[in-house]
Image 1: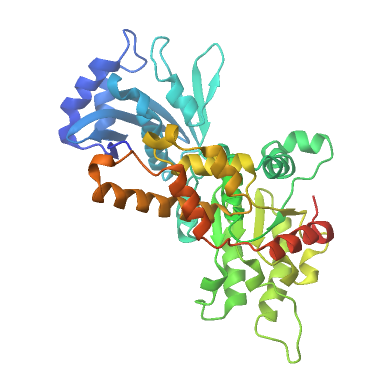
Image 2 (image 1 turned 60 degrees about the horizontal axis):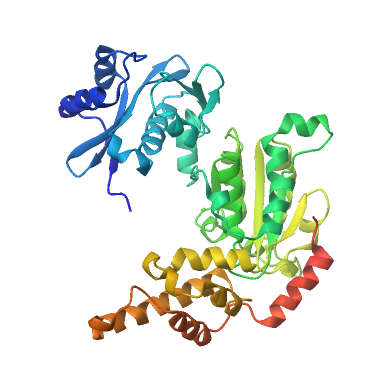
Length: 424
């Protein structure tokens, strides 16, 4: 893991900034050294440090509603660590808080920072080498998002989801494409979705997919926790209404409610149960939410049969999408993330993939950690015979010792629910 940290510029950093500029500046820089030094002291500047050494710096200047990158430099020996991209992200957060909506950069012909800009989502203008990025969250939305407990998720979460090809393709085509290209969708008469339900057995990655969609769109991600709404003095229903009223003030957002059955279960009983008022409130909120542009509500449930039938009618949720257990490619990606690098050539991953069919990602994580603990104890007891990490047998023993999160009868019910309730 990289050791470098990113922090604000300090006056005592000036000498090292000068040295960094000398190391990285081209023969014909866009901004001269005097402008770089002035911006360090007057504008927004961040540095990356490795121990006591400054290894990179990013300096930005605000001009009306647009920001300009005055300097981005990383010591050559640290360029492959992604330091430049992290510096740009830190600088963006500072400019966004000041209401800056667009950051631009003029990049000298021979400067080698273009990949850093592209890696952080800047659109590179052809022939001009001009990079521009629209900051996803800016101005007042920054503090409002913070008050809601929301955040802008890192880029790349979508690509980090291994396997699950069918689910990814469904979400890409039904959700991401129409929302990311609204003008093209409108040209074909395709209305972007506003609300969807993800359902499936526990531990299958519904939350991961919701976050991946937000990351793919670069929209703020806000998770509404039903269990926390009870903290509102006026009750859960009022807490729900207040939360969605605040969300309505954001420019755009992905709103996620996990275990939605807690606040939207079947209404039954006489007299009405206390949760019926919350279900009624949610049924009122969703149509209002659907009238707002730049919004996507994702609800997740392990028990779709428990949801009130009125909630699942057409007009409230555009799609009801099943998320099943990880397929072989997904299991391979999960195993690969847990097997230590030094042991990968010694482990029969294909055998682990076959042996973990029907398990959730959490099941596989538990088995991998248990095998790692066994290998560690063995290395401590017999250091001379130690190998770099768990063996195939260690992993298989761990798999045999666990009880699957999802029993066969739950999988059967899930398949029935796809036929009966799925809306793809």
